[in-house]
Length: 287
Image 1 (cartoon, rainbow, N blue to C red):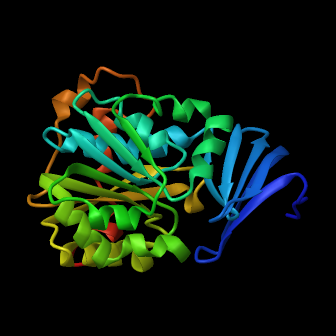
Image 2: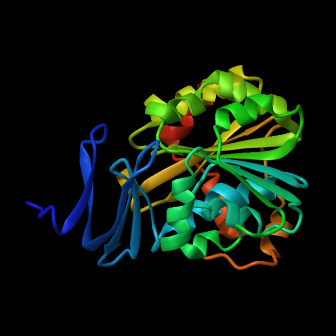
């Protein structure tokens, strides 16, 4: 099918041999920040679309799946999360979800590009509604350096809401970075990172993540799955690593009785997300 470039936004996924297109009404914003190209489109069916360096970051129609799943399972797995670090996540949707938890007393977001946050405040204000929460700290700095310079056992949960492991984002997927995360996590601390598609990236990204996280000293590593229509293959994962114990369950009663509204996440979804297809399980069991 031939697509009109003036009507459709298309992202190609070379490793999957596929492309994903959204019909657009118009481009709302375009700029070249110090670090990357940032664009916002108004689409026909998926609301507003945030694109960075020609890669889809989020749409207003389905971002709730990603943001809820990268935040709530980890926070309901940790016994008592109080201090949370978000590396990346400049659109602030993950920060918003973290701050829904009453146990959290401090949430630090470190993103190198302030322009992503300012553009999000303009075009995705619903994602930024917790930016002025007194528990929130927004730092526009190098997340790698911040982690390296943070004190030992200073965070309970670290959420790496990163771009793909190419270019500047590649260092967020290394053993050295994971070792520094391990050092600054407290007892029972959890590291969570988006880990792409199990269909396209099992060998190239997810298995190496397991090896690097274990080499960095994490006691247990486990991936969870969820649908994400605007990402390559429509099937996504994040990978959770625990500093010092096995990831065997979560605070299911607390999740079932949560005192905030969600659109996708609930206790049953959390349990289901921990089940992996046989081919993924076999690939990761000895990764």
